[in-house]
Length: 423
Ligand SMILES: [Zn+2]
Image (cartoon, rainbow, N blue to C red; front, side, top):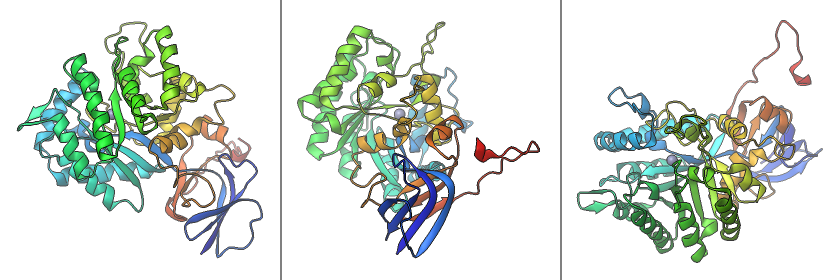
């Protein structure tokens, strides 16, 4: 079945206004593409590949509104302690319900790909089992990668005779897609470094990707990022490895950072920043000036080091707000990292689309190209600058040529009779 989507502008296909698909795959991008079995008018919207949320905790969704627990200090470390008690009382059914609701929320904003950080420091692996089941149940409509994330540490956690490290391995055996870690939450630099060596060993042993919560702290001396990069580079594993957060790298000395940029280029290491989360969590011990707590996003972009954005949290113990709308994440990120130069606007959407796909290693099936699955979204804007400036809504999400949802365009016409199409 041939379908034609017309009356659009298309990200990185400047001259095209139509998309032709056949049996759920892209056939062509262009103009006057000829006959089709069905023609869909997208009314002047902007087509992007689907949003990719490169870092999201589905298992924590809405735990922040449970009256039994409250993060009084607002810090990352109090949140970790509170969650450790809370998770003991949860069941797989509850977890799955939370995860499905979270997925439903984010999919409603145009996300079709999620890297789901999932706590495995639980001897029953309740969250991991739930995440794997939800991943498999929903796979036709959304792609989820499950990270075996030892929230309480590989070596600073032990329960019922199992360490965090043991549980990471068990989670991988159950089918988790990525090895996680949190070296800055281990008890000493030695344990942190050992956890990184073990992360890389496990990834190679089970043929998995790596995504580490790395140096999510304002400590300017934190060096686990350097260690992760070195271990990944030694094994030729840089492109398969992601360093999430790396907040301390935003506080590091410039001379040190400059040297590291060269090493990141050599290794091909990927990065994820979570702008809203870390703007909220970091700088808590600063008075003024108060740091932003974000890694060196602009410098990564300028040095062709792959970096994507993620939502991280939706109303959980770490962060009390969030919706899963990656337009909001992009907007906050662009402001906080000053990505508003003339050359930035044309490529900024990469941060919530192609760059996330690259670190998830799904480039074979992702993107607006002939022969790939016809997965895309439609934004309520005539072009990419207007989309960013006005932080527009996602009006439709299409998977294999079929609508996952389509919303009415809001009617902005007021008594002033302004024609919105004239901007
Ligand atoms: Zn996280």
